[in-house]
Length: 81
Image (cartoon, rainbow, N blue to C red; front, side, top):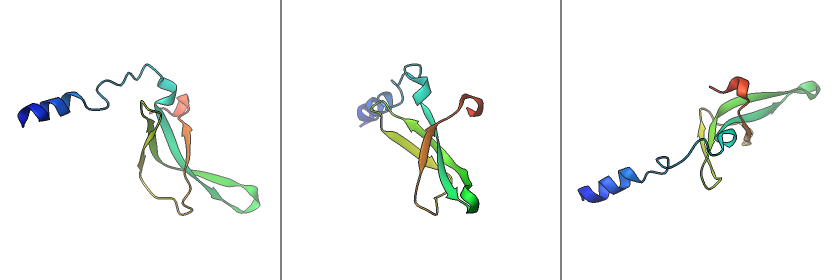
């Protein structure tokens, strides 16, 4: 059993991910767009998403959108934290 656990710990998905491979696609911001009167909309940031090696996304939300819509964009360099 210990051998299986060691094998699992060594082969976690992020261990062999090279973040320098595609740094611009690594982190994304998750928003919901709230429509307001007068054609003004408000972008509310709800969380962060990460691009996986197979180009799928892992999404972490701090809140759920009331309109059930998510908008995922690359994080601008000025806001990369």
